Image 1: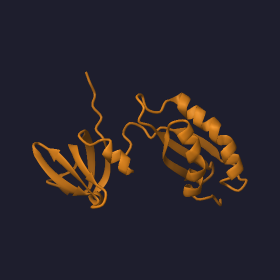
Image 2: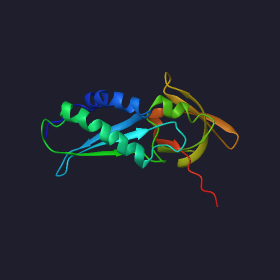
Image 3: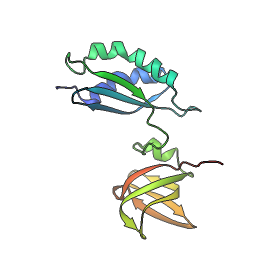
Length: 158
């Protein structure tokens, strides 16, 4: 199935997201037997993305997508979702808003015998392509190319 680029779809949907006070975190198009366009939304608002926000966005982008026709007339399902609490950091803003907070890090290759650990994100340098993290009183840098996934550490009370 021929599909318009994710960039073109994102550009068309960005004004709708801005009007609702949310940002588009990621857009994914899955081809196959049941093609689906999934738009993941994010926000800095307390409480994050809820079902009502997803529904408002879905309803607001329907006419935009009808006009854009991302699949050139072929049927598809539109899904709108939150990326979830354990979403990986993808954008500069993801790293920057978590500075000073505990993060989970999964590496491609073990470092000091570990591929998965928690640390505090101390700094992010997009120009150098690295982060500084601290753990057990020691700070060290990791190149982003070493990291499979970095996300907010999830703590459970109780």
